[in-house]
Image (cartoon, rainbow, N blue to C red; front, side, top):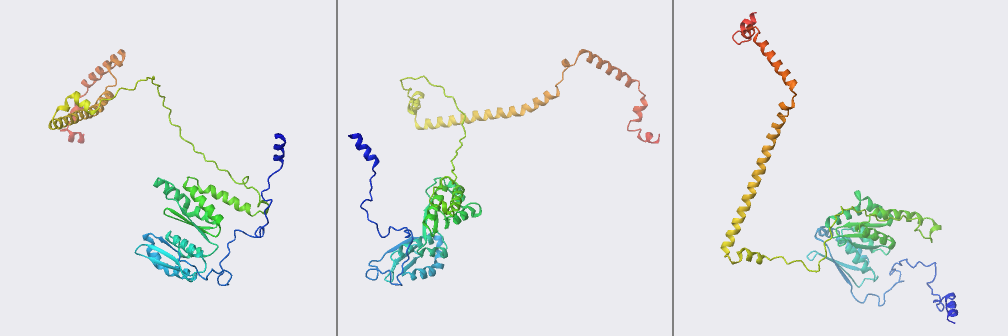
Length: 379
């Protein structure tokens, strides 16, 4: 019986949607990701009671170097926020920016858009780009990268790798994701008109700080962009077209040091004598403080004296070695190295030269003297 029940349960599958009725939004023609704009002027979207019941406000701090720029462009920010019925305030004493709803605010979500505007302005975005966040089809994301890498030098190198030479890598990433990206300090500000582009850009930024080069992601994004143009591949898996990059970490092999195995002994090693034990053995423990200081000074002088003597001997040895080497070079050939026949031959040649010089004309010596120089010229 048990076998038959198992076979029936395997063949029949549970239908969880058996009693589910079709809803009005179960239609393929409806784009569920589309953001509907707030049309309060047309009278289509109205708040209950005609206005917001409570006041909402957000405040954001900004760095000191942004103060001059914010003072310059604050009238532009005020004008754009006033169109949506949002009040703003710039506090230069505390270094903060504040936005709050008013009685004229019709769109309840615009206060969150105004909060994102303050964040983008604080992160050094130009005002012409930052005010686009007030539109319904624009979103932003601020990625914090300051705590991802502990080493400061390594963090700077990886952040520069995200920018690329002359900003080329960042520009290519902006074109592929359709987002505006700004790297500033410990944050990366991303702003675009699609959630998909924000997600892709955030993944590239985080992987770059995890030592994965952005070029690999750029190659994948380029291939995905080309595949998206083909309508036949819309509902297919693209994994076979995308490149698979594997991380290859080639570690340098360290020279293996053979360790001699020590014989196992169940007894622990003997305890080393402490500083007080050594003082007790030498008798220094019972000496006075003055005697200890004098002994320490004497030991220091003795050590310096022995060291200076060793240095002097080494210096003298260095001075003697080149003299001995030159002497050895001069006396390389000794009498023992010359054969006997050659020595006898040289001896007779010297005797013959001496006899020739004795029989030479003495006028040569007179003529070559200093007093007979004029006579030599006349002759």
